[in-house]
Length: 134
View 1 (cartoon, one colour):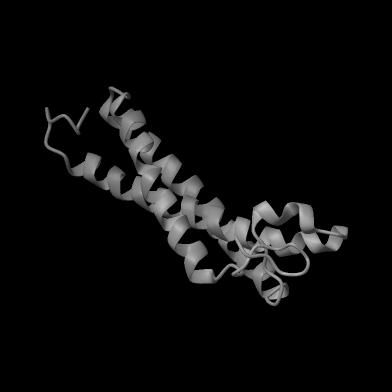
View 2 (cartoon, helix red, strand yellow):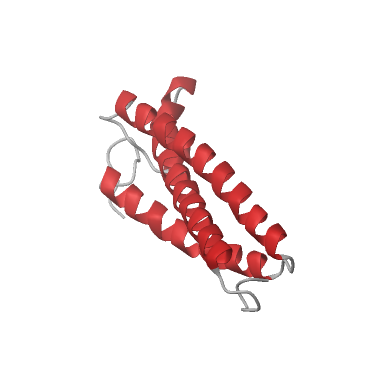
């Protein structure tokens, strides 16, 4: 890995790379969500679980997404990876790591929340007696 004179890993992070990984991690998070959903036996309980998870994950995800974008904008010329923590020299320099971390976490939660709300609609419209109905 190439590093600059401060020891920061090159190339610097780009928003599209962070967004792509956040979406991929969010889609991977749908698998445990589906397993947890199928472990709930009652139809109303299953639907309510998905609705609550979707609403909470979506709300927190959007909040983290906005905060992360703001921190990214504040430190646009010096974006660092979490692995570059050892290169920080001042307390204020931690802003350079917060932006990408919050942005990726926000995208993970937003994708997970959206998937939970879509699954909630599928459970709601599932025919009685099907494996998805509960």
